[in-house]
Length: 362
Ligand code: SOE
Picture 1: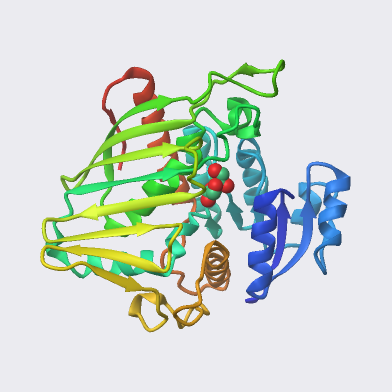
Picture 2: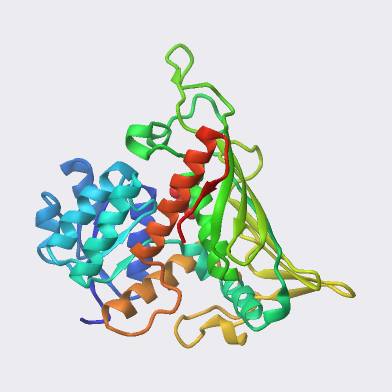
C-alpha cells in the first residue's frame, strides 16, 4: 500500500479534526468524511481538499485505505466491526469499546483479518517519553518500585457543562478513568515495562447533578478516580484522575521512582524530562540528536522549537502509515493495547464498586 493512503474520517468533532490534520500533515489524503448528519459531513468535507461527504459508513469504506473512528464511544465497536468485515484497517479513538467483551471481540476480529489497527495513545509519541523508556530499559538496576502520577483536567469543572461522555449509555460505565486514566496507565506500562496486576479504586464526583440550572440530571459516571495498584515486577503505584480540577487543563504527569534514579515527565511541559539522582538532578531537553528521538522516522523540530500534542498525532500517523506499508512502527499502539486498557478499566470499575483489590489479567 502506498505511503500516501486514502483516509476516511468518521466523526467531525474535535478529534475528527485532530486526526484529519495529522494524516494530511504527513502526506495522506482524507478522501471521505462522515458526520452525524449529511450537513455535518458536507461542511467537514468542504474544509478538506480532496474529501467527499460519505452517505454512510459502507459508502465511506468503499474507497479508503484506512478509516479513523472519531465518534462517541458507544459507536466504536459497531463501526470498527463493520470496517474490519469490509477488510479496511482501523484507527479507533480510545476507548476501543465501552465493554470488555466488545474490546475482546474486536481485537480477535482484527487478528483474524490480519489488518493493521491502532488506538491513539498518542502521549507515547512525546520524544522525551521515548527517552525515559530508553533510559529505563538501559538501566536494569533502576529498581523502579514506586510508580505514581496523575492526569488532571478541568473542562468538566462547570456544573452546567454537559458532554456525551457524562452519559454512561454513550460514553461507557467509566468516564474520567475510561477517558484519560487509560492514557496514564498505557504510558506507565509502555515506559516502564511493568504490567498492572491488581487495582484498588475509588470513584468520586464534583457534582451529583449536571446540566443547566433548572434542567439538571443525576450524574452516574465519575468525575475522578483514585487508584492504587501493584505490578508484575513488585512495584506499587498510585494514580489520581480528574476532569474537574480547576487550573489543570491537560496535565498528565508521572514519576517513576527507583532508589538511585527517578524519572518524571509533565505532558504540559513536554520539552523536558526530569531525572532525579541522589547527588544531582538532571533535566534532559528534547533534541533530535537524542538516539531515542527516532529522528530518522519522524521529522522533529530542532531543540528549542517546542513540539506538542499535534506533533504527537502526526508521528502517530507516520507510524500508522508505516504499518500500512508493511514497515516497522515501534511503539504503535494497536487494538491489543486498546484491549489492555479495557481490561484495566473493567478492573478499576469493579474495584470502585466492590471496594476490594481486583485482579487485572496480564
Ligand atoms: C477529553 O478528556 C480528552 O479529549 C480525551 O478524550 C483525550 O483522549 C485526551 O488526550 C485529552 O482530553
